[in-house]
Length: 274
Image (tube, rainbow, N blue to C red; front, side):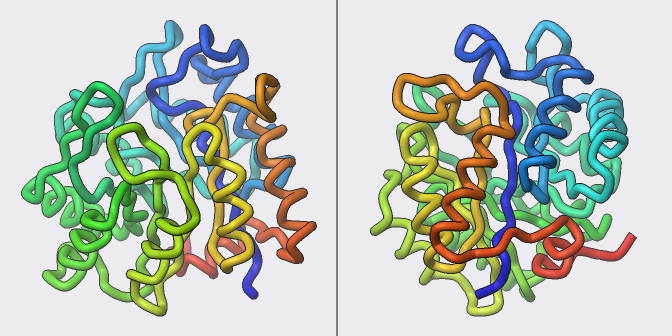
């Protein structure tokens, strides 16, 4: 079984310091949390950015500041910026991080209920996002909140909006309003993608580590972090993203999976050479 890639989603766009005081807002805090995850074994940092007051933004220069700080603190790490941003942002806003030519970025592959709101990702939007990312040689991580999103990603690949070979999927399970966070659904999604594709799972809230354990055993990869879950254990807030990565590393050790370095993750995901 190939080595395990751990992604750390260090802050997201929805959680706040009121939920957990360790959630990072400033450039310095984001670099601190990225380093905690990197030192614990994360090969990839999934990045949203905030203004200093915690307001989510897709501002290109804010992304540049944060990415530069992360690279300085975490040599060789892969940064995977979000093009999802926050609910209600325009497509133009959301695409700004692609102007920095990261190796990989998220591509949300369909609309869905997201708590009390609707996360909008129309087919025309997805085609535009795919074309922009392909033109810039940015690998798309296809974010799928339910099975229809997998089918949409395959449609985009078939029609040439994103490359069809060695696709990367992230199954985001447990969002209120989308697909549930259980192993049955994870197995169904993992069986629905091309045989040469790679995948990881993001379990929301209490689903984070049960699904991580299942993915590790199944040969997939995992994402953990404050964006998705603020707790180390029931009733116990995590003190850092690194603490959540450490827990994923411990699970991998119990299940016999070695941890991929950033260099190894680049090869597994077939990222371009910079």
